[in-house]
Amino acid sequence: MERKPQYDKRTLFGKFLDGRCNEEEMRWLLDYFADAETGDLDRLVRQALEEAATDDVISPERKAILDGVHMRLSAAIGNSRQPASPPIIRRIWPYAAAIVVMLSLGIYWLGTGEDTHLVSRYGDDVQPGTNRATLAFADGRSIDLSETQQGIIVGEEVTYLDGSSVSEYAGNRSTIAEQRLTTPKGGTYSVTLSDGTKVWLNAASTLLYPARFSGAERIVTLEGEAFFDVKQQLQGTGDNKRKIPFKVITNGQTVEVLGTTFGISAYPNEETKTTLVEGAVRLHSDAGGSVVSLTPGEQGILAAGSIAKHEVNVSTHTAWKDGLIVLKGASVSTVIKQIERWYDVEFVGATGLAVSGALSGELPRGIRLSEILQALEMHVDATFKIDGRRVFVER
Image (cartoon, rainbow, N blue to C red; front, side, top):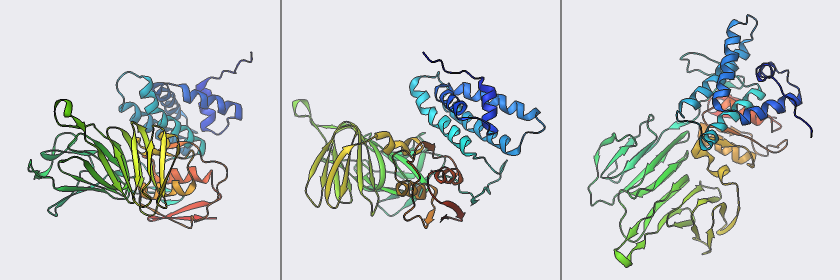
């Protein structure tokens, strides 16, 4: 049986940073990154940083790369203090994978300290989106929600996830007045509804819902993209108990569920896509009257009044909720739309952009626009230039 060659990871990592790895060494290092514990990766970067500190000939670019990698690993470890387990490793791994991708692309960070003016080779850089949303009430008032919070809870009053009050607003127990949660481009937020259902809103999205559900149905209206974790709710007593349906109304479609997790993308002028993670849903087309049921792992696509379904990789369509931009299996136009919404930019001249090979990989949504553009340049026959909030495609 052929034995795989073994390398000293510290030596090989140094060669990698200097761009001196051959194909076989690169494969070995990528395998190591895939299998290594996050703490091992952090120690490897710390060692390289210590060596850089004593090396008089270390390049500024290599030092910047190491600083950036260490920052990302430290953030990942800081968010996972409990003992490592397979789910945690899976959650942290995308950051480590992104590190490898960014290193292999030669991406590094410009600007230090408290500087907010970010510069890249594409022009003035753009930071990623944050927790931003506006909450509007039925009486006409609206509130810009805190960017230091991730979501709100709707009850007798509206609070943030940590229990602090959103405002002086206190809902009357008998009210069923509607509330409207809206995220701008470059914003995301979550809301826990009065029945315990949790909804995550992606950028440029709006959810309309009652302050308190009543009656035989629970109904919300969505424009944009959201991920739903619907809680079962029962009505009646004894043998007369029945499950109260939960319905999501979008442009041209109604999704009916009882208790499940799923994602919906229903942006204006785009196909409406419903992706089921767990449970079961029924899709109703307003125009054609067709009804389609989904099982986990299936996606329904509404186009021209009819609904078609097929099997998909669910994580590809729900990764945004976990802070990821997935390139694998996506078209260039789909990726560009994601970038435009999350970074609040507009691409100019991207129509008909050709792809050189299939898109692959995934990156955290917390990286800067320049890092996304450099990854895209590896797959398309074009270069990019940032000018304010516009990205010019140059061929």
